[in-house]
Structure formats: structure tokens, C-alpha cells
Image 1 (tube, rainbow, N blue to C red):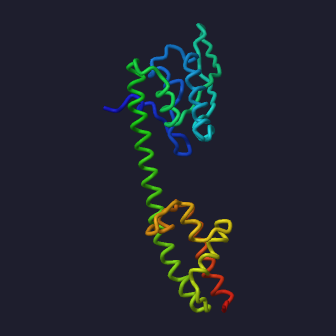
Image 2: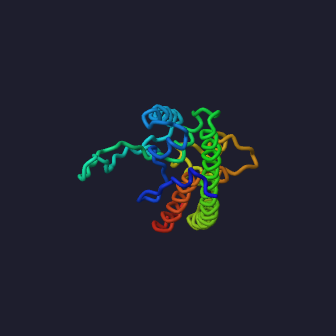
Image 3: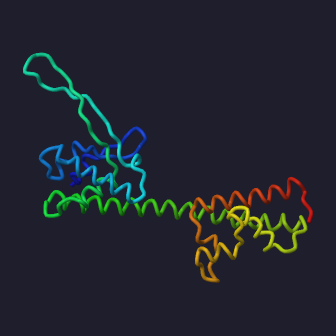
Length: 217
């Protein structure tokens, strides 16, 4: 059976999931929406304190709803709402009263789903890293060949200059020390996808410059 919190999950025009605060508060055992607002505000503060961008997790929205007037005429009024990310729903649930069955269910659901999301993101990141690591191996081989043709004798020193330009003057041994790696551990194996991309660009540009300008040492 589909989870009650999954039933009210929505997807916006950008493909991102969200939960409406107007729907969520009822499932968490709140009798009035106004009493739910302090929980949202606490979650917003917790989001800030965790270093997350609030705009990535909270969206203030308004919508017009039709209301009955007791006459044949229909009228509308504006209501305020929040679109909340999975992470924020998790924060709200974690700060709720676990003695309430609704809150306990929410804590379990959002904790498990948040962990699944983290694992999926880690798998994507690992996939990027593996691909880029292989690309750098290929580029490094090409750079070694280009450097030999250019007359480079001390390749380790040549490579250090590449790192120094990218890491603010740090040589390979300095980067190794900063990352607190063992002597048998390679720097490239301990870079995230963004850092690997920067090094991939560095090696590609170094190879291209040697070939383009026919540099001879």
C-alpha cells in the first residue's frame, strides 16, 4: 500500500518533488494550520544552521481558492502555503512529538527516504568520479607523451607546476599532505567530481599548449 506521505508528494514544473504544508500538517496530527507554522519556522532555522540554502528547500506560495458564501455567487480568497522539500519535511518530523503516532510515522518515512536519496546521490557522484578518473588516466598518458616530445626530462617537476597553478602554489606532496593521505594513496583517488573536472581541464590544456605551440625545452 502506498505510504500516506507519498500520496501527497507532488512534482513541480522543474521535476523537483515537494510537499504542501497545507496538506502535510493534517498528517502530522495538527488540528490547525496556524499551529503548524512555528514547526516550519523551526525547520527553516535548522536548515540555515546546517549550511543549506533555504531557497532550495522552502518556497512561499499563494493560491486562490473558491469559498462558499451562502448565495449563488462564488467568491475566492488567497491562502498562503509553503512548498517543502523532503529534507525540510524530515527536519519538521524530527522536531515533532514522537509520542504522536502521526509524527512517529513521518519520522520513519522521511528518515528512510532521505537516506535513500543520499545513497542515490552518492551513487551518482561515485559514477561521475569513476568516469572522470578514467578520463584523467587517458589524458595523463597523452600529456606524458607530449611532454617527452617537448623535451621534458623531469616529468614530476613538470607535473608539480601544473598542480601549483591549480592549487595556489601547492605541489603534489603538499596536496598529498593536506588531504592526509598515506604514502601508497594517490591524490586523484581522493578527489570529488568537481576537483577531478578541474584537473581534467588542467591536463587537457597543458597537452594542447605543448602541441599547439610546438614547445621545446
